[in-house]
Length: 195
Image (cartoon, rainbow, N blue to C red; front, side):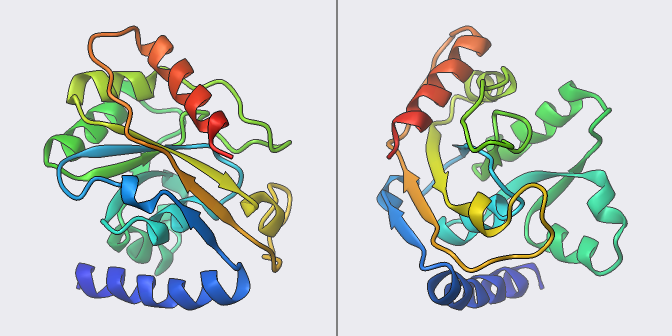
C-alpha cells in the first residue's frame, strides 16, 4: 500500500510539476544511491516537502507538525508519504532521536534547518539539530536550494498560483566531530551558494 501511494504521488507529481510549475532541477545526481542521508533545504513554503520528495529518486521521510495528523484522510496520506508527527512544543531530543533511527536504517530524511518558513524569502540561520544528526549518524548532508515555491504558495496565502520552481542540489557534505552550531552555519552557507 505504501509503495503504491508513493509511486502514484510521483506519477501525479510529474504532470503537476512539469505542466503547472515548469520545474527545473540541477544536480540530481548528487543524491546518494544508497545509505542514509540528510537533505537540508531552505524553507519558503508548504510546497517545499512535496517538491523535494518529487525531485529525489529515493523515498524520503520528513517531520510535520502534529496538528496535520488530526485531519482525517489527509493524516493517512501524509503518513504513507513519509511524514512523521512532531509536537512544536514537545521534546526536541525525542524528535532528533526519531531522525537518528531513520538515518541508521539507511534511509533519507528532509530537514529544514531554519525551523520555519521564511516570510521574506531570505535564508536565515540554521538550528544546531542538523549538526547533531549529521555528527551522530555520520551520514552526508545534501544541501538543496529551492527557488520559486514562495511565489506559488506564499506564507500568507491558501491558494496555489502558477509559476516556475527551481531546485538546485549541491554536492554531499561530510562532518566529523564538529560543533553542532558550526555545522548548521556551514550548511546554510552552502545552501546560499547554490544559485
